[in-house]
Structures are given as C-alpha cells and as structure tokens.
Length: 248
Image (cartoon, rainbow, N blue to C red; front, side, top):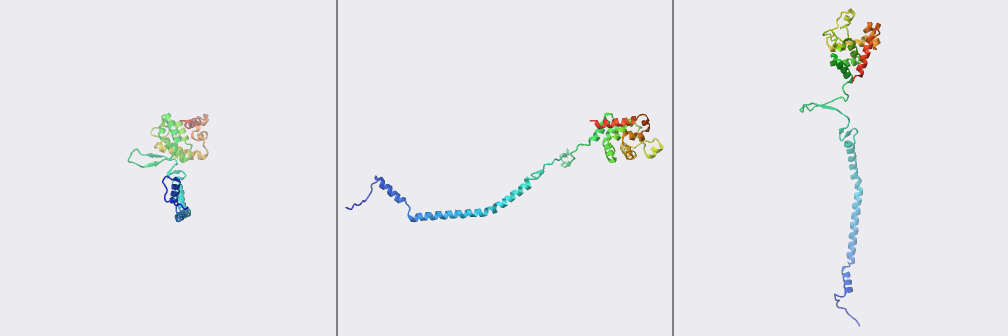
C-alpha cells in the first residue's frame, strides 16, 4: 500500500531539525563562489606581502644612513656634547651688566715667584715690595736668577730703606760704567724701574756671562773687601736667597 505524508507536526523534533539543516546548507554554486573569493583574497595578500619585501630595503636604507649621520654629527663628537665643548675654559665678566664682552684667561695663577718677592719685601716693609713683578720680569728678560737682585738689594740697602735720598739705588751700583771707573760717587739711577733693569742687566753682562754665578764668585768682584773678612757678603746673599725661595 502506498502511503503519502502531507504535513509534519511542530512537535515532531527530528523531522524539524532535518528540515532546518537542509534549509541552511549552501548550494554547490554558493560553496564554489565562496571558495574562489577566499583564493582571490589570499592571492592579493600574498602579492602585497611580496611588494613589501621588495621595497622594504629601499625604504630602510636611507633612514639608516640619516640616523648614522645624525649620530656622528650631533651626538658623538669627541670633546663636545651636542655642539658644546667639554674642554676646560675660563672667562671673566665685567661688573657692568651692559658690557657683555668675555675675556679668556690663562688657567695658570699669577706668577708665584713675584708673589714670593713681594711677601719678602713686605715682611721688612721695604719699598721694593711694590716692584716685585718688574723684578721677576727683568730676571726673565736677561736670564738671571729671579731671587738674586732682591737678595743683593736687601744686603746692600735693606730693599730701599737705607739708600741715598732719591737715588733709587739699594744695590750700591754705580750710575754708569764711567761713574764706576772714575768712582764719581754718582749712584742715582732715576727710578726704581730703571734701577732694577740697570742692575739686572749689569749682573748678566758683567758677572754671569763671565762665569761669576754663585754669590761667592760674584763677591770677588762686587764686594772685594768682604773676601778677606770671611765672605759675610756672600753669606748674606745666600741667606736671603733661601728666605725668598721658602717664604709663603
């Protein structure tokens, strides 16, 4: 006997589930279409990735070059940081705010030799204290021990305290070669600067250049009577040479 089913009741769950699954299942054409779309998207993504791989070196190379140049130009500069020098420098500024000039100065302190000469003469309240810089300057100019002129000057005339009036001569030095030869008694040297240079130059040319270097050697010509007395002149000069050298 042939039996025909015309309808299904809603309460029949197996039958309803089968119908829903048939309704949701895509057709063969739809499945093929979705598959082709997926292949096309993957192909496009692959091509884009290939382009990125090809062009990436051309993009990165200039960037790396610029980074390296920037590093060595603005950052890594020996002795400088970002264009600023790290070397020691010294400047002094005028008190006047309107004056914006700066002056570079030597890092060395003022000549310590001149300071020692000054302290020595100040200790004895001697007039030569005000001319310590010039004494050292002339010693350097003529190649004479920087302490010698001061030591002799104190032994002979107490650094200017015991000298003929207005003579500026604390060394017992003749005013000229002629005065020395004629023993004229002219000991006026005009000024302290003139006196300092005259004596320094005279010690260089008349003594040191002739082999008379030590106080004992200089004494034989400078103060001959002192030789027969056991050399008190040389002892005096040596004493003050040492004192000047050690003074602080």
